[in-house]
Length: 128
Image 1 (cartoon, rainbow, N blue to C red):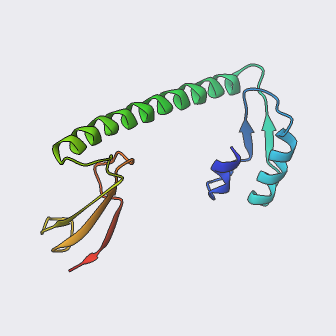
Image 2 (image 1 turned 30 degrees about the horizontal axis):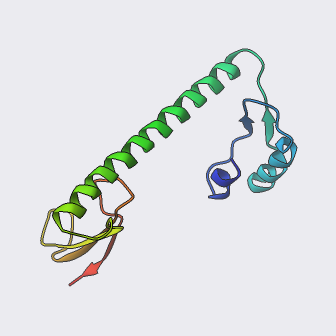
């Protein structure tokens, strides 16, 4: 959680956690400082907040499973690419020049980190 909120994400007034942690008070202090007002770190026991926490856990598990699956799919594609291009190791970055599409400037350089499964380029370095 510290890592998530350290990236300047929205800090709510309450944070629900599935169990009491020794760092709960410290987490509340850090989040309160980031938000500029008191943030409660709660362990719900019953009611709507328990159901909300169950839903959050289910969503997190599903998201983790999808990411794991996506990474495995990327590895399979990279292994095929490595074999077809007779590479000695898996590619870690791919670059190409894209010539005129509806979304990009003419002859733009596109870069894809190989470990990021995405249909859109991670960065556009510039145009020629």
